[in-house]
Amino acid sequence: MPHESISVFDIFKIGIGPSSSHTLGPWRAAQRFIYFLEKEHKLSEIISIQVLLYGSLAKTGKGHGTDIAVQLGLNGDDPVTFEVNQIDTKISGIKNSKKLLLNGSHEINFDPATDIVFLFSESLPYHPNALSFLATFSNGEQIAETYYSIGGGFVKKEGEVAGGNSSVQLPFPIDTANDLLHWCMKTGMLISEVVMENENSWRNETKTKQGILNIWDAMKACIYRGCHTKGMLPGGLNVSRRAAALNHKLIDAKPYSDYDTWMQAIRSGGNDFKYILDWVSCFALAVNEENASFGRVVTAPTNGAAGVIPAVLQYYICFCDGYKEDKIIQFILTAAEIGSIFKKGSTISAAMGGCQAEIGVSSAMAAAALTECMGGTQKQALMSAEIAMEHHLGMTCDPIGGLVQIPCIERNTMGAIKAITASQLALQSTPDFAKVSLDAVIKTMWDTAKDMNSKYKETSDGGLAVHIPISLSEC
Image (cartoon, rainbow, N blue to C red; front, side, top):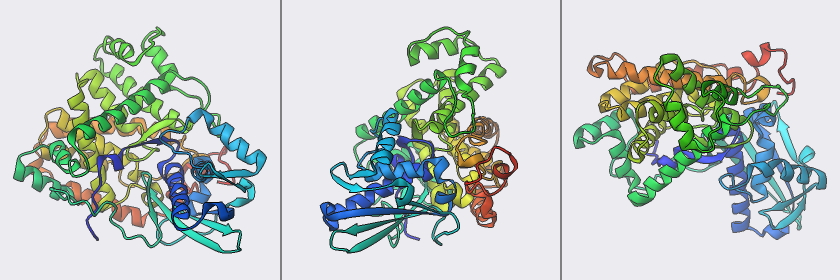
């Protein structure tokens, strides 16, 4: 396999929930299809478009908003900037008018009920998350393009050579944890420092730092919104939001109008173990309740696991005096590299590997980042990532009703707590005596993913999804 150069901004993407593979990926695929049409053909000559959803995208697409995502992508809307409170209005308008504005400019007839086809019993061999776009031109010509949403918002066009940003030559090419450790030992640099040197191949350091702080701004805004928003999650399962109630209970219902004042109030509550545990859970719940509500989140490395890294970073800021820009940058740089190694050596797609590929990877990323920021060595950081993943091996993805709610939201709290525990274990250990390496656990994770029955890979065909009576039959 060719070397794949992955940037921190490939791992961390600002977008809209509820799923990076089922929402963000298909959205990006639709945008790519429109770009292809504009570049190779005339958009004005298209009279119809049909979207075919295969495999996992078909089986859990409704619950994950895949149909919504492809409509917005074809319409020319961007997940980074589109106002989330306008989603219902835009989608209702398309449904009622049966019209779609391709890239916001060329109107065609489009009925979502018939022009988005869910092929529940069909799957394409390359990846379970596949979708095809069929376009018909006024002269009768038809073309088709197939894309795969391979996890974390990454999209691959059928026939496209694997390797992503391989044209970028990095000073420290990394495919495995052993590669990363080699460069750290050779240069004496921390993981985050090696990553920053690589990022300089794409842009100057000032832009990288600002971009990372923008990522953190989106994360903390999501946490704050989630901790201050009550109500019921959409989708029909009647799941109540819990983060706002827990936040209300922990700080005695006092109003705090902004993030920094709120942080001061949280810190003033002390360092009791149960108090900290409740807050870590609250932070994670907040993010994934926002995600489940089609809110603005950061893929980290996926949307279904978007709460783990913000929760652990927020823990570090609140309870470990980590509220410094350089430490936040260090945390996110380190986390990103661990995520990229998992993507190269295994998968970050639940449709390929179950929830170990989402919650497990995010927990490993958070563990390594926290360990480095707490003063751990490079080997201790990698050890903490290994510990975190080791205890997520085999975790299934079985969303009830095809919605990223049960058990997905609570799993983020558990992933965050496991990350903190893994970090503490590594900081108190000597990595030279460890029996299992990070590379070994990544290979094991991939072997487990390949052996796992497909009904436990984001299809809602097994596990909790079929044993809870409120499951939606069409999912």
